Length: 140
Image (cartoon, rainbow, N blue to C red; front, side, top):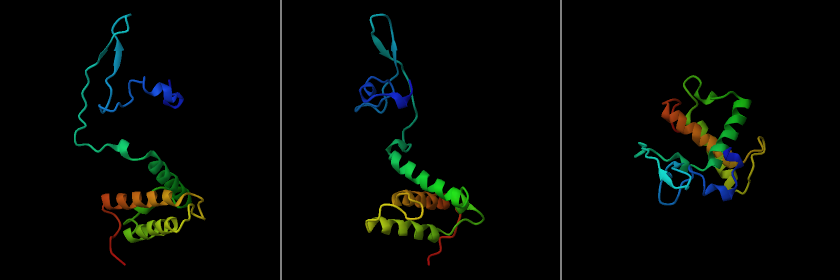
């Protein structure tokens, strides 16, 4: 069964659905025909790791839409070319989209995408530049 075909009523019965008291339900297996179940012992070393499931999917998808638009317009990852795009160029774009959104404009006129998509993409590029120690961070 594909996850895309699961109805809301089926979610509670799925072995991989998180419940409120546990990070993850144990895998359930049949023991015999009486339909008794026992939990399979499992271990996972996730302590101290960031829980990426907390990042809203729409944030990731929105940033991906804007990054895809930019990849078609320029080239994929072009902000990393050479020495890398200056941080302030990315910051300026991020702020223009943020101010347009704050002024009540939902969509970017040129791309037709949500300004929040472009905000996410610019933030992702800025984080990536800093992480890769590329692009200057000189102030204006």
